[in-house]
Image 1 (cartoon, rainbow, N blue to C red):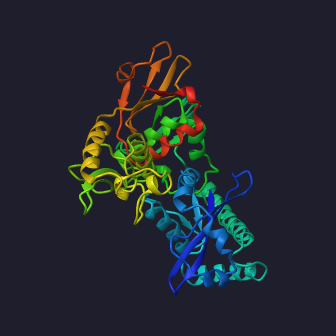
Image 2: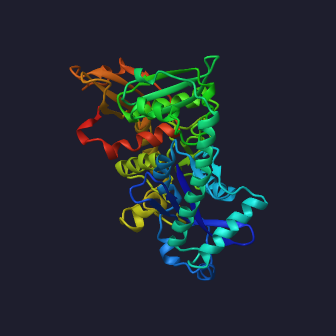
Image 3: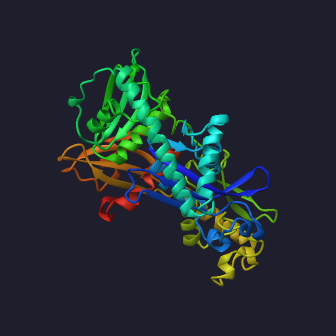
Length: 435
């Protein structure tokens, strides 16, 4: 359970611009997690002064997209508590701006209405008498009050459950204490919920214990439980995401939909210079690879430009009116500075881009298998997730053909890209193989 509070700057009568997100949970080591975020809109200096805020400090914060992955990992499968609906809408709009479908049903402590507004007004008035409303300390005290209020309501709910709710008995002892994905099925054998866990038995016990946390799942509908053991948490996340998108279970609220992918397209400038554009619309002249992380596209193009000395401006990496950084910083001749003729550049561009199209980069991530005699692997082709599989440890995987026979083919999407992007941070270099 995570309590969330967004501090914001009011710009006009209706516009609120978040500049700090603060989280509170009993599970956090230090209780609070703070995410300063740089406002997307330009805000006059006098507005910062009116709100007693340090303009330079806020503008030095990272944009929301840089914190989004960490926030998503923190919020996964947690009950999210907001003080009021507008707080949830503000966070949802931040995710929407970066193409992530933050589609869930949060708990609102004080819904709009006479009683809810009165409770909220009383608490904010008492705290603001002691602390500046835009200070970090105010957010921490406010979250603590939210936590206290929720605990009072939870105690009443637990009393009701003990007296009235009879959960169906499931034999959970047969399930292993290892990573995997679990499926809740109703009386018609339809999957109504998909979840993942590092310890399947422990997670299922938490679902069906008498001290269960408040959830949107109606456990009385769960007739049976299926489990897929994956050997490690990364593949569990990938399998969970794939099944949520294909089955669309009624009680799953995240990872159902996908934002459009980023693709690389070709074109020409008004002067006839060959150019590359990163877009989210399908075109016939685009590369077949579909990226769901803009940073992946940019990184791929940056390597391409550097390797073949192409114009960074016309490869979609820089938005400048004059010459690109090849000329202004590296002092190299470039087509955008007139140092190379358009005709010669276009010929060279076409040759190098054809090589880029034919380029085949295969990457294998090696992970823990389901038992001591096997390894798990994740396979990427040209930076795109292709699937996962398991292979005996005595099998040599120095050639990618050795792997493809064991591959469980999967579809790349926004969430798989997000999951796999974390692998380079957690795996050893020797467990990332380039073939």
